[in-house]
Amino acid sequence: MCGIVGYIGNLDSKEILLKGLEKLEYRGYDSAGIAVMNDNGVQVFKEKGRIADLRNIVDEDVMANTGIGHTRWATHGVPSTVNSHPHQSNSGRFTLVHNGVIENYDILKREYLQGVVLKSDTDTEIIVQLIELFVNEGLNTEEAFRKTLTLLKGSYAIALLDAENDETIFVAKNKSPLLVGLGETFNVVASDAMAMLQVTDQYVELMDKEIVIVTKDDVKIQTLNGEAISRDPYTAELDASDIEKGTYPHYMLKEIDEQPLVMRKIIQKYQNDNGELTIDQEIVRAMNDADRIYIIAAGTSYHAGLVGKQFIEKIAKIPVEVHISSEFGYNMPLLSEKPLFIFISQSGETADSRAVLVNVKEMGHKALTITNVPGSTLSREADYTLLLHAGPEIAVASTKAYTAQIAVLSILAEVTARSRGLEIDFNLVQELGIVANAMEVLCDAKEEFEDIARKFLSTTRNAFFIGRGIDFYVGLEGALKLKEISYIQAEGFAGGELKHGTIALIEDGTPIIALATQESVNLGIRGNVKEVVARGANPCIISMKGLETEEDSFIIPEVNEILTPLISVIPLQLISYFAALHRECDVDKPRNLAKSVTVE
Ligand code: M6R
Image 1 (cartoon, rainbow, N blue to C red):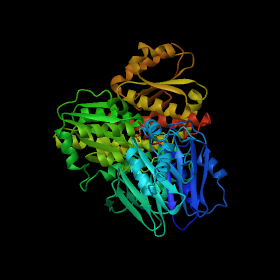
Image 2 (cartoon, rainbow, N blue to C red; image 1 turned 135 degrees about the horizontal axis):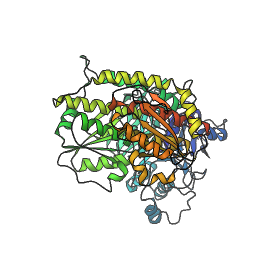
Image 3 (spheres, protein in one colour; image 1 turned 60 degrees about the vertical axis):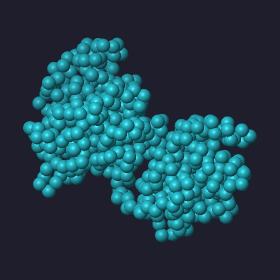
Image 4 (cartoon, helix red, strand yellow; image 1 turned 90 degrees about the vertical axis):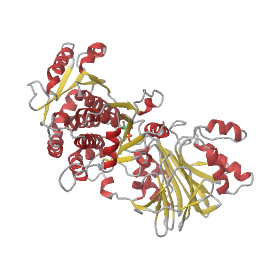
């Protein structure tokens, strides 16, 4: 959460910083700011709202070759101009942007900054005031920066300007992501390579507790103790078109439409020359060595994990538990003797999941991360990684990552099962190919989903999603999608569970979205629909071909029963999208949210 950028070179930095922040807006978008530095000192422009609002207040006439910028998701202090970054020390000499949370900021404030007047409610301002304090006590900027960093507890990606040295950006990282980008006559820093792809595709990854002195011609990476570190750059393999909306009105719609393509890419990436699905043998060994698998994830990734449990238990016959990462830390179950942990995370940066990863690694357990972002924190810190190959997902509402996670989990289950000599009565490559085609059919039926959204969701306050078995898990995802972007209060339930309490909420016209894609529970879920209809509910039944009845609102094409979540979710994604659109919500950037949740 929060994104930072920095530029030092020969060009005017304003536009580069603003464009960079636009690409990072997915990380937070309640306020934003830039600070630019030239011979006349540092000028700060910051504003509550979006980057577009910030653009309106930036003075076009100021020319500066060095600058830093920030887009915020508020943690400490309300979204406001005063709380937005950059923050400045009281003399105005030091200016700083920060992504992360300083857990001991209150202690530091009491211990070191008693006499200092703080302007904002943020944890960040403490950092910049401490640097000034230590400089006033006689340290130079680099020493003061180092000393401050050693006092901080928590997470940070920091870029610092010193008005008395317009040739340097001081940078540091711990737990929050940060890259340094390299150019011929400039260097940049960014939370994500996407931000600075406009100027370079060469990046150096920073590790925790590293400090970097960035000038226009040089990048010096050091440990906090000052030991020099040398690290080769890598080429960011991002295509500019991957991160543009193109002709789509929203990233979410583009990403929904990309799902058939992503399925085909996953098949191709995980297929060997004989056409068989394959994954790294070390991962297969780790799966086979485990007596129980623990899937750890949050939000949509947790929902994908619930589906993954079905695959791994049914196909590979290994017991699986699925846990919400933020709960696991406090409420760890009794672990089996030989656990394997699987972390599912689109971003690979989710702090709740990372906290569990750090913990289980300390306990000596093996961990596999399934992520969309190579080199992300969760990928680096786990023993093994499986990539989603879904391309950047920019809309806050996760869509193509969810289906990619499920597809990769199905491959993991299939390859493990084969290695155990278990019989599999379907060809997964073919079945995933059928899924990709079915996805296309669904993506082409947008008008029907728009009608459904209008009919069922245009004015309602709430909505319920019901299903049984694997459909229940997809219902949970449907409810999350709808609530996060349309603000309709939506909940997913196991069909049979409604009458144990929630049915009390059913009123005349309450929309119930029921999934009926599984033969074994078809009668059961239809019985549940009858129960709510008898109490006035307005049912929207989404069934699979072969199980349909006349009362159904939409019939999805037939695919292998165990893979139905890959396609039954698409109507739910599209219905949510259109519901949000009708209600004039900001589809790609829903209120209070951010794409990667890097605070616990
Ligand atoms: O990057 P991650 O997959 O770890 O993110 C987990 C959740 O924050 C994420 O899935 C969130 O629930 C999405 N906004 C849902 O659309």
